[in-house]
Each structure stands twice: as C-alpha cells, then as structure tokens.
Length: 439
Image (spheres, rainbow, N blue to C red):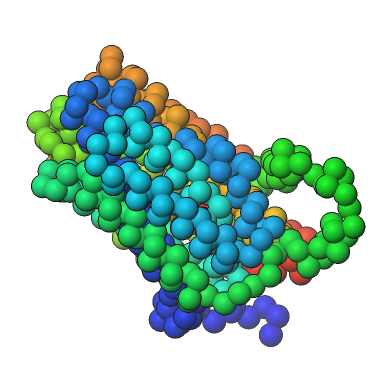
C-alpha cells in the first residue's frame, strides 16, 4: 500500500548484518585510539608549557589536516573501492603512529606526525560512511547511522578519559602504542569482514575515461570545485551543511579543557572528564532519538535543539565549579542529537557517485572549523578566563542557530515532504540509498 508506513527496524536487525559489525568495530578501535593519543599529546604540551594557546594549537593539530584530506583525498572513496581505501588509510596511519612511539622523538616531531596521520582520516571516514549506506537500507540505515554516530562520540569520551589516565599513570608513548595497534586491528576487520565492491563512480565512466588523455581529465582542484558547487548551490544542502558546522561553537570546551580544568584546580584526569562530558550526552541520547522519534519529528526538532545546544554553554558565564561544568557540557551535548537529523537529511540529497566527496566536504568544514575555533579559543583564554571564552562561543552559536532555523523553515516547511528527509522531486536510481550520517 503506497501510503502505508514502512516497518520499524530494530538495533538487533542492524547488528545482525555481518559487514556492518566489522565496519562498526573498526570505528570503535580507530576513534578511541585516536582520541587517546590526541588528548595525551595535548596534556603533555600544556604540562610542559602552561600555555592555553599552545595546548589549543596541539589539539587543533588533530583537526586542521582535514582541510587537505577533506578537499583532495575524500573523493578517493568514490574513485576507488571503498574497502581498499579504508584498509590503506589504516595501514598508513598505523605506520606513522608507530614512528611516534620511538623514544626521544621531540614534541614538535610528534605533533607533525600526528598532523600527517590525520590527513588520512577524511578518506577513511568518507569511505566508511559511504559503504555503510551500501550495506544497510531503509530504516535499518537510519538506526545504523545512529549507532555509528553514537560509537564515534562514545569513542571520543572513552579515549579522552583514557588519555587523561594514561598521562597521569603511564605516560604519552604507551598511549601512542595503543593507537597504532587500533589501526592495525581496524584494517584487518575491514579487509576480512567486508566484501569487495567496485568503485561507485567507475561503472558508467571507466571506459570513456580510459579513452581520454591524462591532460583531458579533470584536475584534483577541478573535482574539488565541482564538489563545492554541488553542496553550496542547493539551498537545502547548504542550510543542512551549516547546521552541521555549528559544532564549531559548542565543542569549544574540548579545545581549552586543560586550562579550564586547571583554573578549577583540576589536573589531567579533570581535563579528560571535561572533554568526555562534551560528548557523553549525545552518546546516550542519539540512539533514543533515532529509535523513538519519527523522521518528520526529528527534522522539525532540528532547529530548536541546535539553538539549545549552543545556548546552554552561556551558563559558564556564571563560573560554575567542576561538577556543575560537567553537567552543563553534558546537557549541551544532549541537545546535539539534532546532528542526526541534519546529517541524514543532507545525504539523501546527494547522488551515490558523489556521496563520499560531499561527505568529505561536510566533514572537512566541521573539523577545520573546530581546529580554528580551538586555536582562537586558546588565544582568547590567554586574556579572558576559559569560562568566559566558552560562554561567548555559546552566545555566537546561538545567534547563528536561530538564523539557520528560520532559513530552514523557508526551505522545508514543518510536516512537508522535506521534513521526512526526501527531495520534492522523484529521486533517480543513484539517490535511492536511504539516509545516513556524517559523524
């Protein structure tokens, strides 16, 4: 029956898919190990220098490489088999992080190696997100999206706390050794647990591309420009993209967690708890939001939740203690579940053969924006208190979220077809893949 609602999927059905389990567990390993290493290096630099700006720069070094990887490397997941891209990226990162474990490597070299290793995260994440839509379909895909997004956030929280504990009791290099091992295990899981698929952009174009000369083929810059046009010329895509990029405002506490915790009399463990609190609420709320809130309702709540996510941080202007601060950051992250609606609505509007590139551009904006925000917040914390910096960031994010909410209501009226996460025109075959996330 055409108007009948599709059957609701369950988390059990999603985890019953063998390929999804392999991709999911590889994500658990990679995200947790990465965050552990990043937090450990950041705390090391703050302990040695006592500078909020330098610690912010180090934390940003785990984000800024996305400007290269997101723009120029993410499309590899469309041009080449996605499983191959994921395995190669994991292997390269395992080698680079293993070099960081070598004794007597100076701090500046550790940061440089982290910077290069992070450049391979965008193509891996783009391939992982795109292959998830190949593996799951229908409502199972929506729940799979919630699972992977929740896993990403949980891995960040666990890695942040583990990083603080590792610095306090073990040291930095054991944390880096664990990170290298997670990449090796992740590559094995993806390589052995998923089946081979052809490149998404290859079937229709391979023969014609072979016939063209190398000079006639689009340059990486031209392909990047085409991807930017795809994302920014569509009003709905552009608005959804900017909703995703709001994360740069409400994750500022991450970038200055060390000086914030120090200002409250805490050490490395307290800093790890601050970082973890910025994602723990979303980790818990996202699976509930996806399971019990319908697609149209999720879209309708997207704007109000985005506003609350940023507005909650203004409470730090009251200079709360550590316990109250953790509550504020956790509450803000609960409202961050709006990202699930924004991410899934974004992807349904992108053709399969351009999906990884569009995802890479979206993720690149998030990561680069966060890196820039962390540096700016660290610089501001040299003059203002960290609590005031967070409150100002929350206020700015609230204003932007209000503007985007009004714009989205003009693009997609409540209860309309866009609210269900669908295009107003019939979607071609390449767009029949259901919703997915960008986290």
